[in-house]
Length: 247
Image (cartoon, rainbow, N blue to C red; front, side):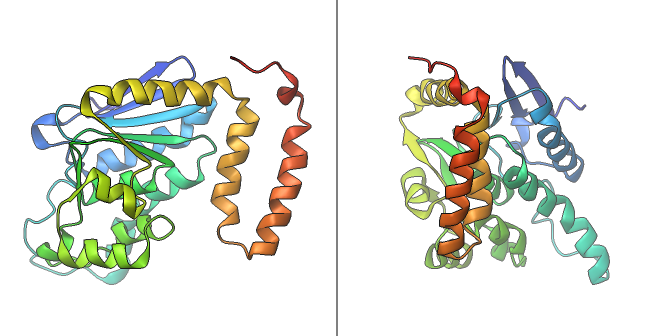
């Protein structure tokens, strides 16, 4: 564990903080690997994950991006192996069995914008901003686009990528990157209330929602409906569902 990614076990919630505030929480590849491993292991101890950035920004991207083209272009298979570090991070956010919640208080650029999209729920301050600046650095943003594919409509994706414009939290909400927007002073309270609601629900039901969301959108409609029918019967007859709900 490095001190560049901090973890706190808060009851059933694993709180992860990207901790490079002086660098806008720009993430190195070793940090991305560490983040992926932390998320992969989280269900052993937790019912939800909350990811945020230290200081004023969420994450301004990957450290070193925009430093100019490499002196030698590596073979495609080498480049693919390097890129898999990032693809794997987005993948674990989708595939881990518990909800992953991003809290965005400031800038979410490039990799940071992609994390915001890949998480299950993203709660943002009205001061947050989002951008995909890769094209301005002569990078075709395949990695970011992969995080958008089941979140962001086509015309919004193309606009963000081609324009490189910095967009507001409200615009990111309309694009599907963000789930809800709150005044900056109320963001932490909104996060706490949302997480508390998850923890009050039976864990098997929470994970059932994540499973359906992960699988059903790739199915034909008839298959997704049948999948929901079977999952509904399976989950709602589990012993955990028989406990009295919290009020």
